[in-house]
Image (cartoon, rainbow, N blue to C red; front, side, top):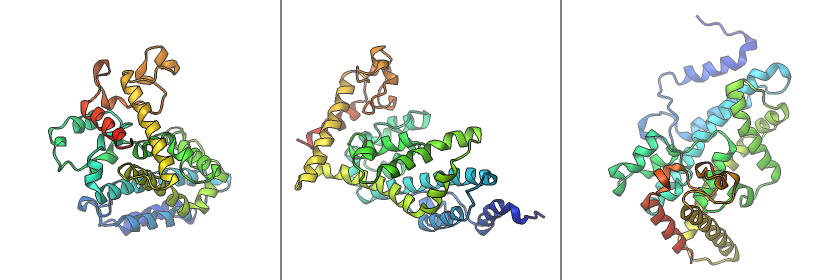
Length: 304
């Protein structure tokens, strides 16, 4: 029998969550009840984990292990919630997103699985489950990948930094918190106590804002098919034109911007420009996927 002493409250709470749902399949899927693999709705799961995380003591040096748990579990939870936000939004307007789903994956990671999906025969047909597949093309455990997702979805460069109406303090907090995960996971690096305490005390609103970043970036994308009515609509449209033109320039220059250090050294696969498509979309000698190029052209034409 496992005996939990009072000082091991973190372990005790983890086990309480496990035993509470030991008869359920706790696969944290997306889009509500995901393919019947989970008996917990996303909202219930979020509430359960937020409650657990808010109970963790994260101040004082002695609580370093709890800060490790807080950082890594919070980012894992946010990954599930971001994926769910993507799935839910795409499912709500499948016909729209089918028109340019490849451009949504401009920064998608290239791997055995993703390349099989892109090249699979069934991706040519309307039953391709883009709402389930799109979230699998990204990573979510540092600031830059999430920032690139927001750019790809909104068709606006540096969307989080320039478009999302939150304070610089929030953006800095978001970046530092997510970027601390790598050192924590691989080297047991400690999380700044003040940052941990701030996130913990504002966790529900922190989560809400990050989910809103994803939903707002997708709302921007939907504006592409709508006629600009307000001055703000027109401003967003101009920003989207600028981004798409940059993407097209990178494609025309065979995978690089031709301006950064790497491009000048003819190492275009390492181009630092944010608008350059990932190598998911080109083959040897930078021959780009023709369907990707067609979607790029069609998106840009929609913004004349």
